[in-house]
Structure formats: C-alpha cells, structure tokens
Image (cartoon, rainbow, N blue to C red; front, top):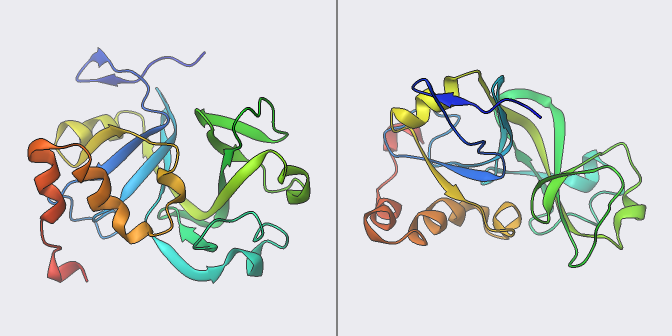
Amino acid sequence: MQPEPTIGGREMESLTGRLLVATPPLKDPNFERTVVLLVAHEEGGALGVVLNRATEVPVSEVLEGWGRLAGEPAVVFEGGPLQPEAAICLARTRMGVRRVPGFNQVSGAVGTVDLSGDPDKLQESVLTVRVFAGYAGWASGQLESEIESGSWLVFDALPGDAFVSRPDDLWPMVLRRQGGLTAAVAIFPPDPAMN
C-alpha cells in the first residue's frame, strides 16, 4: 500500500478516481476549463487524464480494433501535455462483471485497460472505452499545492463522466451539479485571450 499524500504537512486522502475541475483563475492553456480524472494519486505524485478535450482523430485510425469499443465521440482525446505519444485507455465495465483481463480499477466500474490486449476479448465485459493521447502529471506535493491555491476544485466522479457523448459540456455540467455558489462558476465566461 502506498503512503497517503500530504497537504500543508498533514495527511490527505488519495484522490484517485476523483475529478479535478479547473477554476477560472487557472490560466495554463493546457488546463483552462478542463475536467481531469485522477487515475493515480500517491505520495510520489499524481496522474490523470483530461476528459473534455476531444481531437478529430478516430480511435480506429490509430488503434485497430479498439474503435468498436469506443463510445461517441469515438475519437482520441488529448489526455494532457505529458508524453502525447503515449496512450492511456479508460474503460467502463458492464454491470455485474467482476474480473476483466488487463483492467486496473480506478473507481467502481471505471479503470484503465491494457491496449496491448485483444479488444475482441473485452466486448462481453466492457461497456465502452475512451483513448487518451498523453496525460497530466504532478510531482510529489505539486497537486496538493495547486488545490490549496485554488486552481482546482475536487469532486466525486460519476461512472459516466469519463465517457460523456458531449465532452465540451462536461466542465459546466460537473460544476452545475454541485449546486449553490459552485454551480454559478459554470456560467463564468471563457477567457478570450486563451482561445
């Protein structure tokens, strides 16, 4: 078992499987108005994928056989600025499925799946997949510092968040479902300098 991350010198629960939602003051163009699913968070750092940056490249063009399992839009997503040539695949298992070969659970029915495996062998157990080119990563303590400074809001993920059919709507959708003042952030206008 990995040691728990710390924030401000105190232990912090692992955020694996939770969403990071960029706040309007976060001006890094890699992350403006993004929703990141953390697939790993331990003392040594954190790793996640940006859920709402679809490309126009069909999954079937870059990974033969995997396009059939990809949900709409069945394109590769920009997972983050690190190692854009590396691919990470998220999958959502079908109800009642206990074990899936090459599947590493992130939270509930959502996990990563090994792209070197045979996609045909997953059709019975996997509902959908989403493929990401690159990822977002943070060194030890970096993410905790960014959360503390107000760059990110942290929320529980719903099983369908990583697989929404309209990824451009995910940022305001996650904020709205929080209610109260947080929901008002969803109508914050985008920064014209970032477009």
